[in-house]
Amino acid sequence: MNKRPSKRSVLITLLIVFVAIQVKTTDKTPFKITPESDFLTSEEAPQEVTQLIQSACYDCHSNQTQYPWYSHVAPVSWWLERHINNGKSKVNFSIWDTYSPAQQVTLKNESAELIEKKWMPILTYKITHTDARLTEAQRLMLIDWLQE
Image (cartoon, one colour):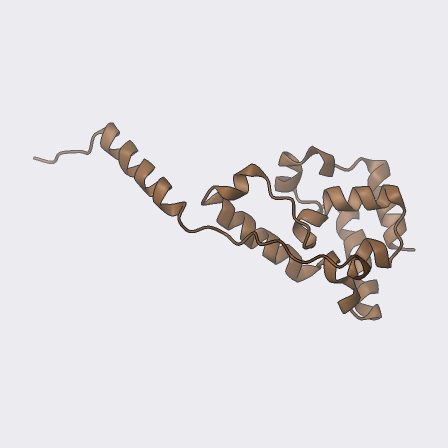
């Protein structure tokens, strides 16, 4: 006779697994910030551009990530860590001065193109960060500034 597990035993097992995976935490050690190395300082961004880039880009593309509450809950924390590390591998605005002048021009042009195509900020970020939902005017302002 095949005995199926009860709903209660399945739920208890899932709860135990969920609690157990919380042991593997992600590294959220703050980085030392050097303002003179930062993109917005180096490029002398106007205040409005600074605010837009910080709210729409810096969580994934700088060492100044503002982690949301759910970044402490596995497995979401694992996905978020991979996403942020991937974003920083493409461009990290906190270490702007380490890029060559040619790289800086390329990164600014690529950023403008991604904003123009509405590929950045990504949808999953905009869902949970309403201040990253750029209006058409804000997008155009960023694109114009990046292409100066």
